[in-house]
Length: 124
Image (cartoon, rainbow, N blue to C red; front, top):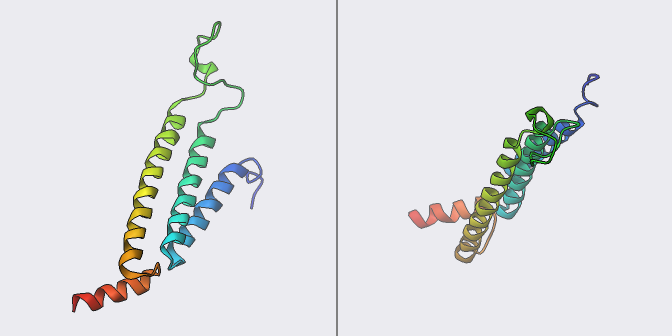
């Protein structure tokens, strides 16, 4: 794998989590499992952004006495992106779950193939 994998194990874990979530999203037929896969992918992206925004030896971007140089602080933009992404992700997950509940109440199944088959039958 190379000598740099151990130096970047966090990024490797984020890539592995993203792959697990993406595979789950593609291969599962159950809608709840697809939503879980989507959330795993989101978490992997947030982990990756947080790891890229962190710089060893620097402080959080909160003004304190005696530290005036920007080189003493970590860039706050990745943390802001992660927080914004988490809020959006929670909203999207709530919307997906509510739509899943409506689909279940109409078709009495969470299997996506079965729902699409029944939908095709209804259109005939």
